[in-house]
Length: 146
Image 1 (spheres, rainbow, N blue to C red):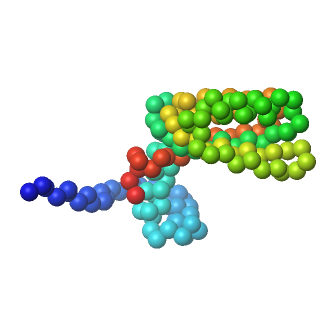
Image 2 (image 1 turned 90 degrees about the horizontal axis):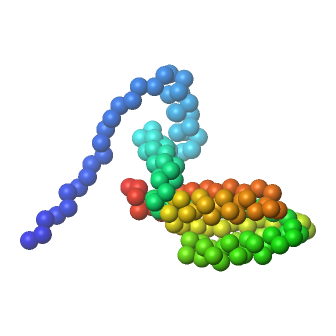
Image 3 (image 1 turned 180 degrees about the horizontal axis):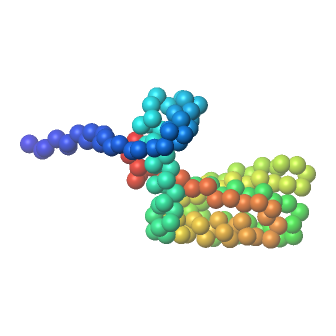
C-alpha cells in the first residue's frame, strides 16, 4: 500500500522589530486587508523570492514588458515586430493600444529564463523611438507555495 504524503505544517518563527516599524507593518496589514501579520509577511517574502529569482539567469520567470513609443518613429514598428518574431517562444501575448494620435502603449507578456527575458526587454526598451519601457517580473507559480 502506498504511503500517504506527509502533511506540512506552517513553521513559526519570531522576529524583533523596532516599535515604529511594527506600527508601520500593522498599518499596512490593515490598509491592505490582510487577516493577520503572518499573511502579509508571507506575501512580502514571496515578493522578495520572486525578485531574487530574476538574478539567476536560468530561473524561469514570467512577466510583462511595457513600452510607450511614438509610432511615427521611422522603422520602429518594424523593428519591434522583428524582435518579437525572433523571440516567439518566449512571448505569450501582446496588447497594443493607441494612447493618442502619436503615442502607443504595448504590453508584451513573456515567459522564459530570466537572462533571456532581461535581454529581450533590454533590446525592446533600448530601441530608438521607445520613450519609456519597463520589465515587470513575477513567478510562474511553480516554485512558490500558496
